[in-house]
Image 1 (cartoon, rainbow over the protein chains, first blue to last red):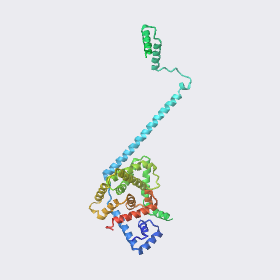
Image 2 (spheres, one colour):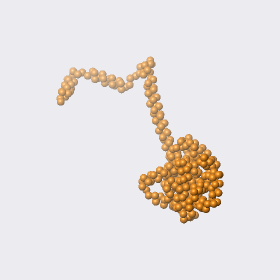
Image 3 (cartoon, rainbow over the protein chains, first blue to last red):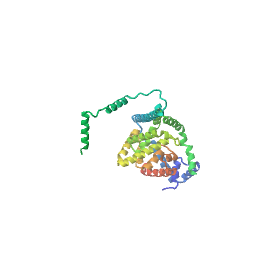
Image 4 (cartoon, chains in turn brown, orange):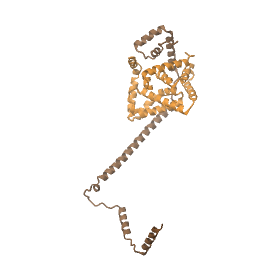
Length: 155
Length: 199
């Protein structure tokens, strides 16, 4: 048998009714055997759940959970360190660019002393001078130039 | 109107009893979100056993329950900054766990794994927890629970094991309170049918 108050009896069992509705259900229970049986069954089910054995996490499992949490925290630190490293690199690049942009040479400000040329600039200048001083009238040079122009004319 | 009255009833019963625990949780969450590792470890100690029991009831075996619990705690750790204390931390954690358990079910269905092996594992797990004192009825409740649909199992476990109010269950499952009422009613009808011999 199914009484229409059956759903209300469930709510009553779970303490989900206000005082007025509770009172209505209690009055109904006095006259309805089906609902009394329903309530008894609900109580038996709840009792069974409450007394059911609870699976427990072992000490080893708890230890493993804590170890995992430590790893998440370490991973977080590594991520923060990476972000900081990237920020530091950006600051360095931006700072360098700013320094170059505001240097006396770039702004044509009066120069206190002539900057010395870098060693590689001297070498480059010397090499250019040597090239310019090559005498193309020497036999070897003439032979080389003639040979090169012959090769250039070949198909 | 009825909903409001029932809501007021909830405030004056279960949830109020848990207020000090909630306050402690909230304080720990605040510290953990600020980078205090010890606070997060304390939260693990306070909630893991309860969450494990819930996970085991939802997925049906201890091994998978541990995986679901780990994912739940990982999700909680990542989301600490987003926790707003609108719901209790316990409810918030439970919502993450229920979501993870649903994800586990979807993954298992995708892999096409059979359910029988997990269910057998759970039957053994719950039996050892209470040793020789476990009665046949207790065993049958667990077995019957596993034969229910995921929807019915969720709502029953949250109500009967977690002692959650309808409002809290609605919050965890993200469904209206009326859905909780009807789902719980149908779940109990189904469970009673399966436990007919014992009731």
